Length: 222
Image 1 (tube, rainbow, N blue to C red):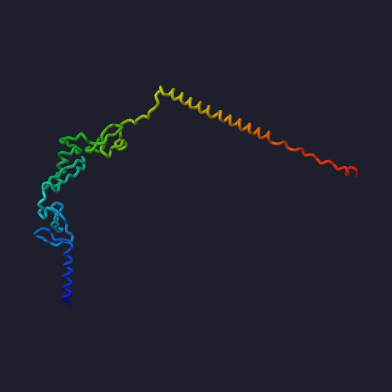
Image 2: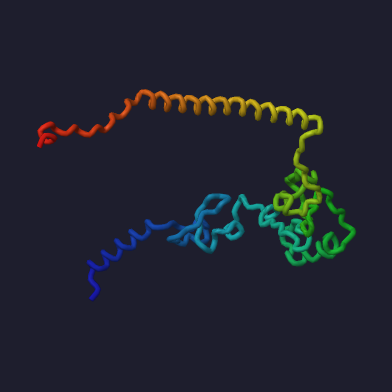
């Protein structure tokens, strides 16, 4: 049975729910939306049906500059500008039939600043020069292994003929010096060790001879 207390409780619950979300800013709507969306141009909040600039007649919305897209051509990878109100497929077909250089169209002047890597043909907005062949490539083909670099490998530096006798003299000098510094040291060490062994042998006392005890006179008389 519905009572006044239940009606009061229901009214308080509805009042609390009104604090969640906000009303649509469109004068003809004013729908209370619990998940309002803010317009990125005028910063007003609207419901899900009127949050787009064209739906609420946003004063900062300019149809001439909005919704401009420039998809890339699938053949030449060139950005194609799509004017407002034009069909994307029609503009792209027109580009391929009349302007696309990859489709064999000769009317369009091909830009000179393109990546020379095979099957690339990208426009070089930020070219990178190869250190071997000195050609400019796009970032995807900047390394020699990525664009089949035609430059010969750099030879390793070899000593000049004039420096070879000098190097041989230096090698002989260091070898003789090392031998002169090592061999006398080894011979003197061996001589010192032998002399020490002789001295130890000379200082060692001679062993006493083993003498048998003499027989007693009493035993001889008996």
